[in-house]
Length: 67
Image (tube, rainbow, N blue to C red; front, side):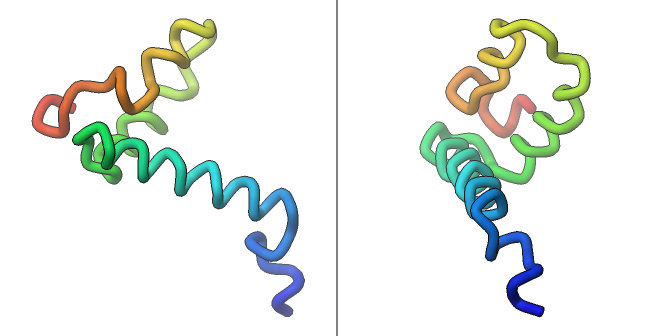
């Protein structure tokens, strides 16, 4: 049973590390993580260029009161 959990695979570990990195980077940039992830996931389907993706990085997002 444990072996089938996503966090127990290499891909699951990488996905978990990526998510943790986004959360911690948001916090380090004064952005509330839940608000940031909500903002990111709402807009992600509409991004297409490198500049679009760059604009969604935590240090390019307005502070939590402005999300």
